[in-house]
Length: 149
Image (cartoon, rainbow, N blue to C red; front, side):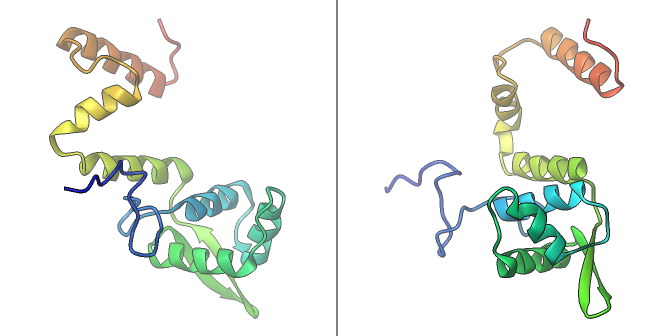
């Protein structure tokens, strides 16, 4: 049997990474576009996103246009005609998008979900229930804005 590699190494037929995300997935360019839009005042045009992304070295207008249209089809952006061009607004905030992507990826882990979370958090997956309860309390405190104790 041929080695399929890790998830990051697997490729689709077109050679693109096989990324699991919101509904049909979200790729690296889509993530960058969403990050860029979240930093700009909305509504935003494709040109506005391109100009902002050009500061980081990305400037392919057609690629950004296609990406923003895909994001609109996936329900991540809203597209509206304004004059002769379209403008876009995010339908989800960046934190919700990231949480949904992580949740969907973990959903594909089957019985290994807890072990994957432990690995990401750099903790021993065989840690006891008491330690997990303490970690859960700390995470909840952080989510409420309390300082770590």
